[in-house]
Length: 79
Image 1 (cartoon, helix red, strand yellow):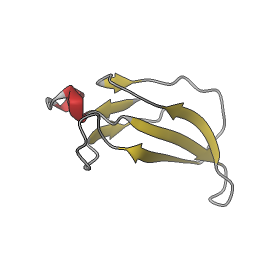
Image 2: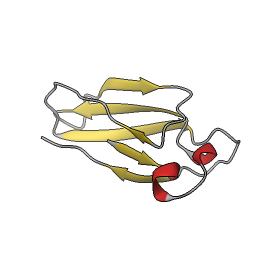
Image 3: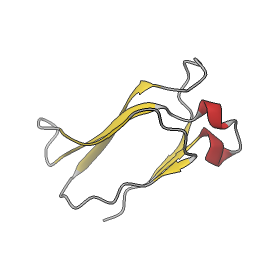
Image 4: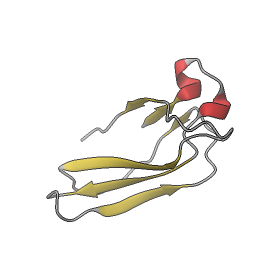
């Protein structure tokens, strides 16, 4: 689950807009499991059925209003 700016009480226009989530069993081999474009939701959830020891978030566009700062309040990964 990702909690974006709106989930933290900020404007939803500051929510992380474009990003991907990648997973890996070792740091050398990353697999993209989520690609999000034009997100406006305050909270996003992606049920996945995969093994991963490592998880990373790659932000390509941090907001919908041109602000260049990413505002992400939480990245939650459950096993």
